[in-house]
Length: 117
Image (cartoon, rainbow, N blue to C red):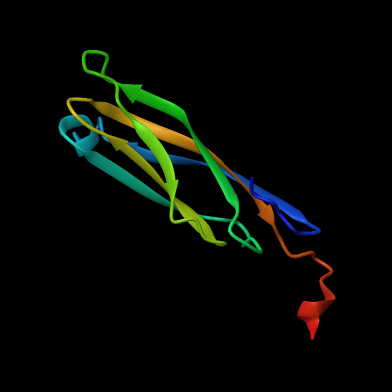
């Protein structure tokens, strides 16, 4: 369990288009084998410590004639942002994917007098 020792908790959220490879015949659509797409996300405001980040696929479009394999993870979490990583492999063909995310963690209080001096 992650314990947050802060008098103020911040929540940031967003949605990111990870790729749209169908139109351009990109590697997620036309390729085979292991493939990865990485999208860097910056928080609107920084967190006091490294937050907890959750990500989920909001939209995906797979070719129905191939196996549908995918993994979506969060990597490189810092106080200012993180990477969403989408992976597929084998003969899977993915036209496009979009992810939603939520970050929760401690933030500095707006009236933090210690930072003023």
